[in-house]
Image 1 (tube, each protein chain N blue to C red):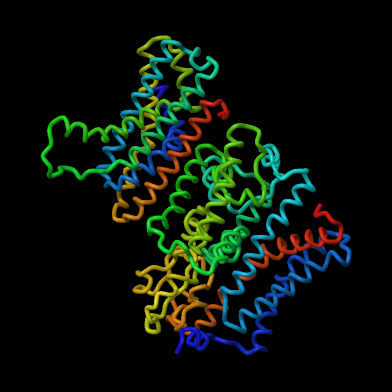
Image 2: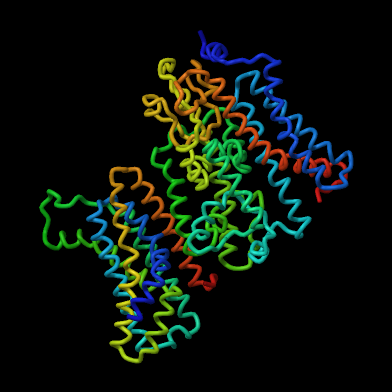
Length: 387
Length: 209
């Protein structure tokens, strides 16, 4: 029997009526983009189209996830769409508001910049120790982000990185372009780099009262906003951003077929890894069913499974709960699991309970961003300008 | 007593300023609590030396040192570059096990012991880094008028600030987690690169602190 056939056999399929019923609770969240358009005031009929399309898309994809039992395939497609939508959504907005995507520190401190959740790990220490918020954005917006981040992190742990991050879709996109990896071995020690980046950035941000990662390293500045080059330091930083983007988000994911930025550099992801310890969900291997084919090790895009996992039956703390190992396991030995329950018992229930908060998170971020991006594209087609 | 209280009041800032260097360095060394304490004492020794140099400068030239255009930038830039070089050397040097079996000459043995001075050098650089608490102490020392008074103020300032460093050797309790050493080494390289770039930019006059 081929691996493909075995995989098909292992799929937990669901009856269509049952899947439809279980999709219903997702619909209000899938309509978040549509709701945003409606709340903006005198929206014309044409402006409702993107929100409607995205709402249907999100609901259909969730339904397909339930019917097919496949997680990663659909999540990945949506995640990539979200990532690629960010510049289309954000940049025209900034140009409309300020005439540029280059922001000045004054604009940041005046609270005119949207709060970026990735700054959370740099903001917390100065805020606690000195009562100073070093990436102000709008404070109320930041507080909302904090609560949202804490709530979802406690629930789905590092699942944030595969279901909530608005940037992760970029390196996921490039990691999926090639059929085969050109670089197949990455030394184990590099898995600790994100924790080092986290440690260094937290300490440096605490002493300088500046969000050091944003100011010097963030690859996604290339596809969002960046500081205006008003000094030698900002000019140097402007030279660094394309290098980190091309290296960590484009070239290395292309070569390795792994999400290198997410797995081996992102300090926010490293922070999220600690939440995997408190989240009730995890990825487990049913060792009785596992044939030790190591396909999951090869497929995992974030190096979150190793030889030790095949002995302990657990994914590493860096697991982003993307579901690729679950989808690809030919024996159906990998599954979403609720801590404290028996392995291999009701994996569908555990998966469903994980999917709800994870997908709601995705709808919350993705709904508005993808709707906004689609609206800009529609505007470009109909008027010749995104602005 | 004034210097001690000033140090005590501003010690958290001093700890925060030294932590990005000290924490990754101690983690990267992977030593136990006792060895970390010895490293910390060397670091603090270097820092005391830096403070006493400041005390000397405060007595000798008073406020002139700080008023001279560009002096601060050069001083901070220099200490940043020095710190980064020492940190990089510390990370990339080959750590030899204590009491190696090879027979070596006295001169060779002395040369091999030089890395033990790295924490002293880092402490000296950290001590010379101009920061707001140090500027306060400098102003008070410059006003004291005598060499003894100036040195005493910086020595007591050092004592007050050093109390906050005492918990750091406890990082040695994590020696059973060898992966933490890898994290420490990577973090030390990142911090070193940050200081190197900042130092060079300061020299180039690009960064206003």
